[in-house]
Length: 601
Image 1 (cartoon, rainbow, N blue to C red):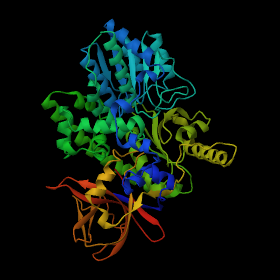
Image 2: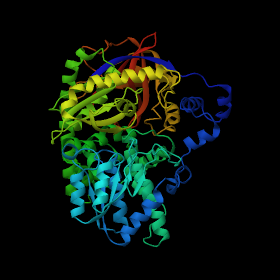
Image 3: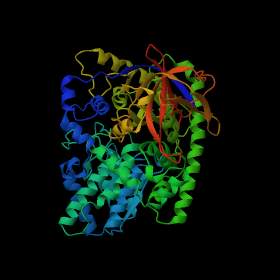
Image 4: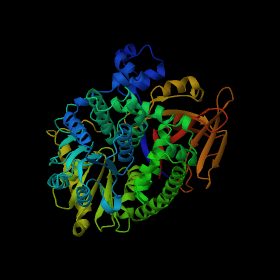
């Protein structure tokens, strides 16, 4: 399904003379793409374009708490005591859990289990019921992945029951910090680790690096130097899917992660890729974000998260085939449920158009699915969105997404009420749970807090967060190109900037006065749009807009018509030979107004 919204485009400025001189050894388009991403020196350009695993990854022992965490884990291993790996249930926690599982298998340590909580029955993070169960099974050490930083009471209980807890997380801290044995989190207030934006799987990878280094030194095991790179298929996948900025160390993980994914022997992954029609040899960031990620996440949203974990760890062909088929099936079911939630919200939205924040919920909605609806609504209405449902324990839980300007954690902290049982997340994405009897006050309190924050921002004595977009409401276009610029020489310059994602967006280009040679539609429901143009050599250039048709909102397009579009240039590998084409992002007029599209799923 396609929805349009109007945005203002802005073509990036030409390079200043200093930057031109610094980047003079690169082609013109490369210089502009680098500059648009804040890379303005020859050294920074070299580091960005010439990725080096050894050079661009940091010593894991620079992270606060790492020495203590490593010693604690190795001591437990020496004593052959039980370890529980407790991970989150999403596309960050599950790949991180797989990587840690593979490490323990590599060193032939068997006294451990992987535990992934049920999203609707147990919720996010540690829970007391599970901790009591771990205690009854003589667990000595509990290691979290992508969760735990807000679980003060749960860690207190674990300590009381004789379980040491090592928290590995990347979410923002609350005012109270759990009294864990050790905490690994690059976002800790007094953290000196050089890179702050690792995802959960990235943090666990640093722990694995440290364990290998110290374990080899102490002759506890012997792992060949560089073995851990084989785990980058999971770490890279999580880094791309969790939408952390693909700069610094994350760029290394994503880049090498894609290389390993293309060679990965994981039978479950191979089976899944075949089921969904993704060529492993040409697997891309988009395949992770739009094809693999939703199916891994579907396990927790619609069923049991361990199914996704088992898919990525099994060595059994029959089991892998069954799990791949199952995850694909429940992902299709998930699409239908989310579509119905969005439809219901849109029907009722007109009564809330005057509010700064969209707040809606229904006890019948699954808390595991409302986050997906949040994504679509935020894109459609350009407002922060809070949606809630009720889990299997009758607890009201929800998800929230920012409009790209509002800091959600700051907003929820600003409320200063007892409406929330708990809340947390990132600046632009979070979760919360609410007292049942106070859910009716949530919308009013959030909007009041929003107004207070806006007033504070207007006060010049209050410093505005430096990490918020300076040009919110505008789309920055990297360059204006012609139809003749769609060639493999230009494309190779674009590809040097990959992998693309948060913090390093896929280059966006403006094309004026393109004459349509042919208009066609395709897809099971004829929901996708294809336009055909001709360059000066009369070669065919196609432009695709997936989910690009919605009768009452689509543009009227016909052969011979001249249009202006904003698009990415991409390579299609579906035919016998690779083909370059445009992926349409939006249509615009002479005033710089783009009619942008947004996909529902």
